[in-house]
Image (cartoon, helix red, strand yellow):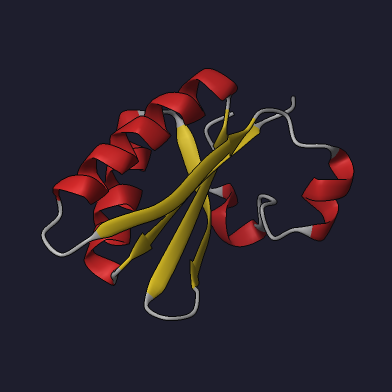
Amino acid sequence: MPAAVGTIETLGFPGILAAADAMVKAGAVTLVKYERNESGRFMVSVRGKISEVKVAVEAGLEAAQKTYGSEVTSYYIIPNPHENVDTVLPIEYTRKVEQFRTF
């Protein structure tokens, strides 16, 4: 079953922590990627059904925006990414996160 991917990037770690927590609590999604980018930016990605990813990203954005000192720098949702994107980019379900997979 194809799964959407949703990503949020923030300036500052507390915002991405709040976003990640809110995302996995708000929707039936699996956290598949966390990464520290340059200049104090952090990124988190979740996978799941399109409707669940949308709900999760909305909750993550709200949580990050409410976090003191945090700034959301970007976010995006890709419904049913092409298999080539899935293969090349680090957004796949790994063995490490498989136990949390929701479908």
